[in-house]
Image 1 (cartoon, rainbow, N blue to C red):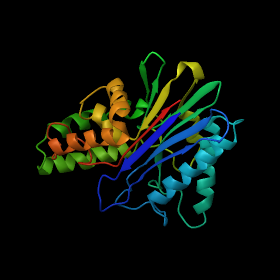
Image 2 (image 1 turned 60 degrees about the vertical axis):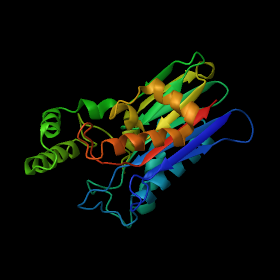
Image 3 (image 1 turned 90 degrees about the horizontal axis):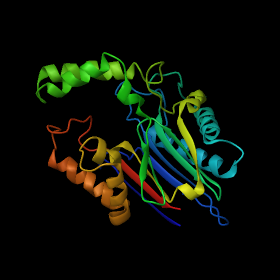
Image 4 (image 1 turned 120 degrees about the vertical axis):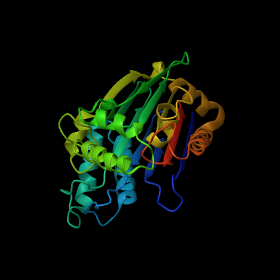
Length: 281
């Protein structure tokens, strides 16, 4: 079994808000891998005194521990309990009802001799490689299917000159429209303070013999495919195998530097935290 992880902050002056972790028990062929991507705090605050890195590390650590120790629980149940435990850890000091309470995307994979289970919540990406080399992406695409006015505002925003006042105003309108759909009906979901979102994660299970390797990417690493179009998901997996997780992140940074102002490839951040994890089972 080969397991490799790498992470890089998008801004050296800000803490990395991603999390990755792996647990491989000493006996057997089982293991758990998780990648979480914290949602950048809103400028109006979050109601939490601890900060997003604390939240993401706490949630990721509890999720890993439960997923490894409680094989009788599904990954959705493990995530629900991890959200509940994390909320309990700061409910007395923080306002968990705040609309911008700390939150995160989640990718989790758990395997043993019989099966490979997976869970994806929000826009981080899981890749499953079969013994034949075929790569299947597992995506929670609700962010791409948001109702109007989000698609129209997005198209208008991308068509406006980057430094124009009209673009700045449209960006504020677009951001508000997206935020209104966060953890809302017909919107998209992230792990925050409500354990119930775990029931709506994208989940699945494959026979162990059908999966040769798995990879998890935060959206900052996945943008090599879905923002810059430098390759497709099978190509990203091939790059992980040949250049490693650091190599994939380096390719992302090269694409970002080639389009520093987002002219050719519009995006919310010039550079984003990027995390990749690869496990050859």
